[in-house]
Length: 424
Image (tube, rainbow, N blue to C red; front, side, top):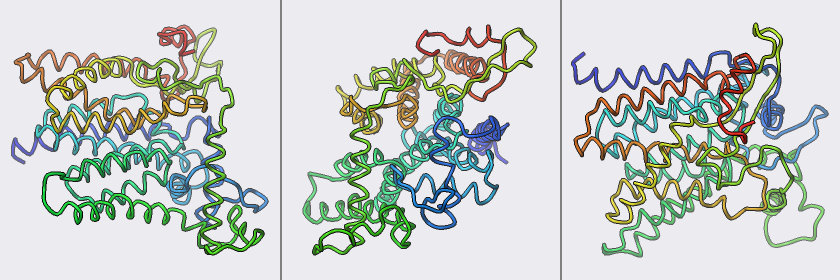
């Protein structure tokens, strides 16, 4: 292997293996469902077997999100059994693959293996990404397909981008916010044949995502025992086929649920606080008796690596400044990606929201930080300072690792990691 190949492949291979190890280590712990796993892993075995979610009495259940995330979790259950490892393995795999994706995205943005490895390394050191890769929730899958759509868009593979966007929407509806962004960015408004181009883009960024999204509902569409699958038969006749009316009714009920979701929750967090880690989400907390201290703590806290996130927020300010002054393609991608994954949440102020939704924002924050690093290198800053900064992030990651993976530690050590009162 040549030195060029070593520089190209060895760092990202080591980063990926390191990330995979952390995501698989003790993945079967804690035992039992934690936080919202009970909603997404509990009946996913029936989804794989029957195509729809059925409870223990074989009765259909109303599910308030599109089914693709549950399908992906269900694949892990089918392969590894209906146990903690089976529930969480799909998230671990997709979380690891997301690190490879940000490497590829950074390579196309910066055309630098150094900066690409830094981007992948920083994502590997993000505590929020790690936590979400170790629980049976859907958000890590959403982030993966957002990154996949971004990468395919950068390669001008718009048909495949549309498929990825449809799959992102099939995880959570918030994946659809990227569709108008990519549609607008893909249109060349100064070239001839604008109408033909617009029709092509509508096919790629609207029709294909919708078709892909509908495919994610195939289990419900092609079976008869899904929730309210035969609702239209109890209603007055209409010109639309019953299957379309049934699906529309289901989606209207999902929309009603989410628009009315205003229950108070001790870990709810307004989007204003997400970037500064104002109120992280505790997925699991116990006080075991066998850590060798008088009082012990064991927690899984969904929170980003503090120094990484706070540095990225500073970098974001720099990126916005560059974008306002120069409109560079790099900054445009970072700003629009961040806007599509973050700003829509501000329109739902009465809705119950949680900080861990920000896992889809984190890749664009990391790219903003890498952009700042690239400008520092261009300005002649000694790379030793860059490596020192990354080393500090690594130490910060190691320090917080116990509360991301549920390692038992003395209560005093746990309390030392609660840097802000709102983290408790």
